Amino acid sequence: MRKILLVASLLSFTATCAHAGLMDDLKKPGGGDLGAKITDQAREKARAKGNQQIASQVNKKLLAEGRKNQCSFKSGTDVLEAGCGAKSKKLANVIIDVKKSLQSQGQKGFKFIVSGHTDSSGDATKNKELSARRARVMVKELIAQGVDAGDIEAVGMGSEKMLVKPDNTPAKKAKNRRYEVQVRF
Image (tube, rainbow, N blue to C red; front, side, top):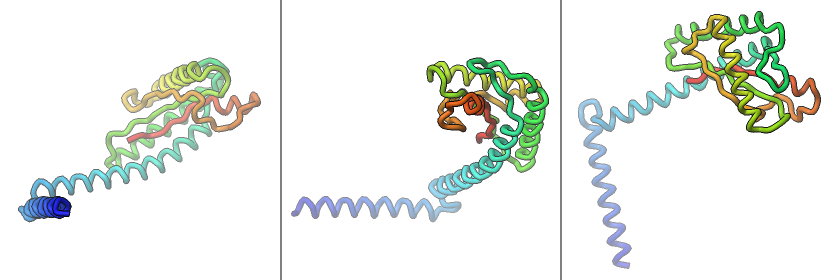
């Protein structure tokens, strides 16, 4: 019983001393180092939440435009089907406009991510590699259409995020062979 009381007393004393030290820091002009840290953390948390909201709105637009201007890939390859030029130009213009809009709002530190996707046919590892190649092909296409190379990067997703499940028909498989563009802060 004495040991329990001794431990409880020590914990209470330690907590009181720690609290007093924190209070002393906060009483200093400007709140001391702790006050500055708390302010910085709150500011960073608010900025991150704001970026999430902006990214969500922008990504809805980018996904819609990407689906509207989707270029298809031949099955098992990173070769674009014919007729992609005008579609990739429209998508590039949307990306350029979004970049200008974000910059005019004072946003910094963002990138456009092109994710390549495959259907579920074949080996998962090979599909992941194929999807990365497809994403790189689209990045090159978008750069050729005017998107700044430093603003965009490629990521392979394989068949991890299929639009259509199951993809058991040629039409459904074709929908899963795609790319998507999103902004990331």
